[in-house]
Structures are given as C-alpha cells and as structure tokens.
Length: 370
Image (cartoon, rainbow, N blue to C red; front, side, top):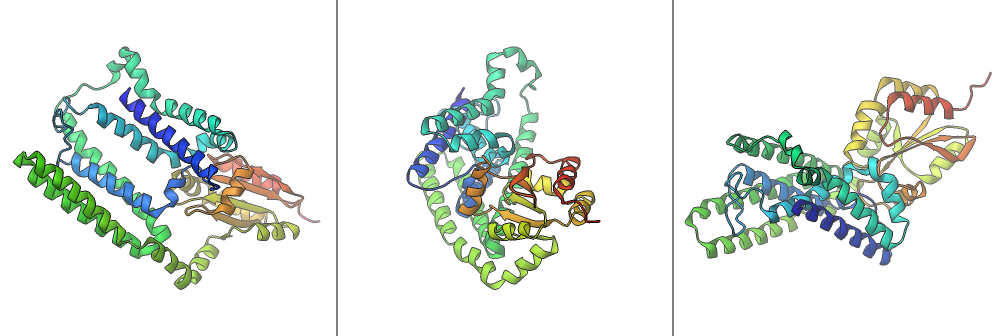
C-alpha cells in the first residue's frame, strides 16, 4: 500500500504539473522530463546513490532501524513510497507505446480528466504489488527471504549502474562528449562523497550524520551546476553541424520539416516519417529490430521513399504539435504518406513488425508507370 501511495502520489504530482504548465501556456508531452539534461543528470546521480547503497558503501537510516538488516527494515514504508515514485519517473518514457492513446486523450481534455487518467495509470502500475497484498496465496510464488538477498542486492546495484550508462548516452546525444565527461566526473565526485559518508557512519553520531548528508547534497548540487549543458548542446550545432548532416545522409533520413514533407509529396514522392527520441527505448528497439532490417530498407529504396526523422530528444514544439495532431502525447510515431493522399497518412503501430511496415510501405507507394 505504501508503494501504491508512492506511485499514485507521483502520478498525481505529474498530472498537476501538466495541468499547471498547460494553464500557463506551456506545451508538454509524455516523458517530457527526459528532454531536460539537468533532470537526466539528477536521475543519474540518484541511481548512483542507490547503487552504492546496494553495494554496502553506506547505509540509509530512517530512524526506526538500519535498512542494511535484510528482511527486517528493507520493507520500510518510506522506502516503499520512494520506490513507487522512482518507478513512475523511470517508467514514463518506456510506456508511451502502451499509453499513447490514453495520454493523448488526457492532454486534450480538462484538468479533471487528466488527473483521473493519470491516477488510473498509477493504479495499473502498482497493481502487481496490490494483487500480492490482497491475495496472500500469490505470495507462495515469491521466494523466501534469506542470505541470498544480500547477493541479489549487490547484483541489482549493477542494474542501476547500467541504467546510468543509458542516461549518460542520452546526455551525450544532446550535449556532446564534454557534457558526458563532466557528468561522469560529477558522479565520480558524488561517489567519493558517499564513500566518505559511509566511513563516518560507524561513529554512530546522529549530528555528524546529518551534517555530512547536508554537505554531500550541497557539494553534489554545486558540482552539477558546473556542467554547462546549454553550451555543450550548442557546440555541435555550430562546430559540427556538417558532421550531423553527414550522419543524417548516411542512413538516408533528413531532419523533419513540414514544408519539406509537403514539397516532396507534391513531386509525387512517398514519404516515411519517424518520430523518435534518444531516451525512448521502444524507439531504439523498433529501429534496431525492424527499421534497420534489410527487407524494410529494400522496400523503402524500391518504392522510392523520402525519409524524415523528427527527433524529440530535446523540446520541440513543432514536433509536439504534430504528435498531438495524431492524438499522441509522446513518441514513437510512424507516418507513411501516399502522394495521392497527402493529408491522410497511414499511422503505424508503436510496436513495429517487419511484415506490417513492408505492407504499409508497398500499399502507400504510387504504382509504377508503364
């Protein structure tokens, strides 16, 4: 129930944020928090902190006991609440394919509907824990606690670090190599501070522990403020723009531009548009397992498609508006344009299959001239 409270609380907070931003005239989408490099850096720092805790570098104490005592305090209520909050934060970019229609409908509705839909999504996310709680018989399928949990705890720390690698890659895509190096250095500095905190914990001084925790937080914030994400983000656009253009040409995709799409269709050329983002795992899976397959590439070349990529890694109101036009609040979105029906593109499923993509491409391509 505490985990559910954390999930619902964070979902309602996210809904309130969406309503507030929309009331203030701002446009947002599903997973929009990952468009801000500073937010991504903050989540990376949080995951490194949790990983070090799982490795036993330091322990989190919440008054009633030590969380290091496996099976005794590991299920503390506040910890469960926070786990629910973190689950929502990390899950939103990955759930767009399954929630795109519901969230798109919510964003176009009243504030009450937004809150209601977000709360329903939260209940669904927390439902596995709720099922075990209200139907104890299901607990038979849950392994019993024991010393093995200490090994599992350490293993899960590596899973968190793997997520940090993904977050570093996201920062690198938008901020360049300098931003990745600076963030890695900041995370290393944070790790050293947490290690120092862990060395002081055996002294059992509550006053020293509180002072150390505040000092670590302040120093961590200061180190992250030294990372100039804006400057790093601007550098590739001015100094390496040609390199980006070359990369776009190498895989056949051009940067999305509505006017260019219209002009291409007017010439009788079919168009395939991919709406994606570097933080969207589903997008990357679709690209690797379907869009980059030889059969799909051959169909695109055979039918003479012009390819456009709408990159929503960073905030772009033009792309957000286009997503909303098709009832979507997030990526991925795949559009197949037939020159004979330029205003009625075929909308592909968020979860692609090779057969479905090839069939849609062949159906929208103009018949060859005899």
